[in-house]
Image (cartoon, rainbow, N blue to C red; front, side, top):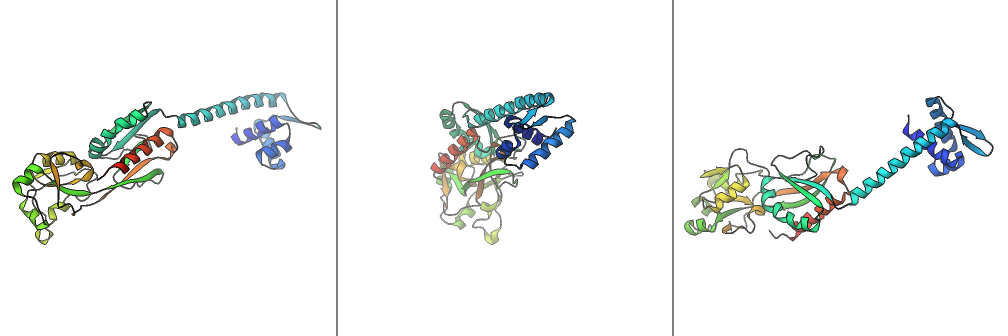
Length: 296
């Protein structure tokens, strides 16, 4: 049974007139008449008796109208309930991002969000591989690249820079580099095989100040951004780290601060189906306020 024909039939039956139904539906009377006739042909029954005083439902028409009225009423209730659900600041949100950013920057800020919205349950999934938001493996992604999927709502989050860092203990022992050429006197740690996202040019620091732009040989390799930070803190050598993981970390210092490495463009991403959902909007507004407060 054609749903559009059924809705037209329901409107005509309520109005008891093609003229009134025409005004309500913004359709011509002839178009409405054709749809009713087509529905009668589909069902092989007569739905209306035409009288001078208007349209009168047949017994079959009464039965169909009652059933259609119940269905349409329930659908309106569902629509209303779904609208209310979208506007409720409760339920669950699942947020995914890369391991390094999630563990060091995002997690410490979630407690404040939960205090502001105690009825929203938060699940964090940290993975250097992007989860599929279209199949709801997560609701929200904070991704270290521009999404390729056109059906996602995406908003630029922030640009993260890379700088060279060393532990204060290491620098006191081996000297603070003043110029790029001074880096040749120092040990370097870099990313190993399978460098995690968002490391797009992991060896840029190994070439800084070197002769003929050749890479220095690192003393150690780590395939984890957080592991690289710990290696720097322990005094193994210098390394290029994203500012979000190094900011306010005790006992490490930025080396040659004017020398900036590759920039990472991050995006806040979620499916079109979650547009205007209150808990998603609340999280988006909160997390953007936090990154705007952050000095880095």
